[in-house]
Image 1 (cartoon, rainbow, N blue to C red):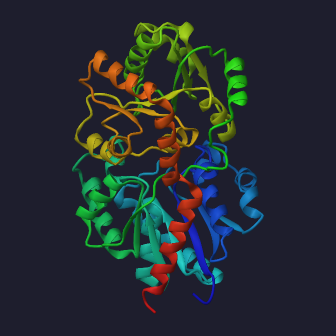
Image 2 (image 1 turned 120 degrees about the vertical axis):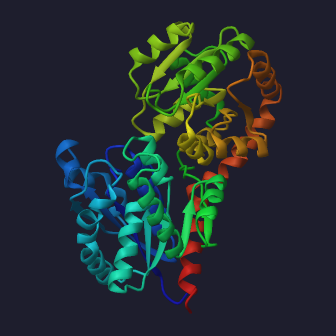
Image 3 (image 1 turned 30 degrees about the vertical axis):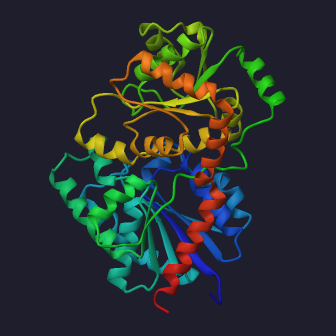
Length: 426
């Protein structure tokens, strides 16, 4: 290419500020992209106006979150009249998406944009409609992130096979067929998308992990962290939410830890979570887990999370049991951002097979243990012992596999995508 490619990274209707996605995913990627000599990236956040009032999100807060990005490029925010929930009823699209077509078109022209990189479905729908209605010439990257229609059902925003679900599925096909490239987070996700579109340009890029933050520390630093936490034995770690209505199961976590502690009698369980400690301890106590062996910590920064992970020996994740049809479809696509963080620290994994993409990755590269709901304690113990007996080998495999989650590697892939789709008409 003779000139740099101008990219507008579009986030629309998604509350990425208060849930950490802005800092940990969006800014991490866009800042790295701007360090490349090949592209210039602008960032446009369409923030639901109610989030400004109900969640205390102000332009000043947005600005403070974007300090790193602002050093290299500008950012743009737009208050938009979307509901606080991310899942839009189709009948509201003419009122909540169409009014912003001219705004986006003007922004694209003023910034001389070549590629619109759209995060999830509402952003892609806005970019698609703007291009169709006004004849804009930019390319569209549909960065799907998740199965919007199925997730809306799971979160009770749509009814399965109801009108909203069926309409969004039709919109999904239009978007998949009408964009220049579809990006998904796992190979299993790519399989599902390939069944729904004739578009052959589907790329898999896992969730991004900042390799400059997440890494295995030297032994002296690990020992210091363990001492501060009161860790004196082999430790199993879980990172993430454990709410009763969430994806991850505290009951299955307790089962894995019980098996682990039968191998190592003084084993400890480290839980890094914003879920209330009282709730976690109460449930674990009901499940027969001694709370004396459990440490619960919250983390407000990636750096702190990395330090806590470095205190552990193995990492675990397990979904709730009795998953329905829609949940099983979503489960099959899950790679999970915590997977990249675990692997970057060099932690062998103990994962539920229901986490389809992650489980396949573990089995393919021998990164630890996968288990189903019917596994016995003896079977799980045998698999864990196999990992612990060959621990350095598994750690090396995990660190090697973590490269597929590296933000640095993902930047290269995205730049290749931008170059390829911009060359397509030449």
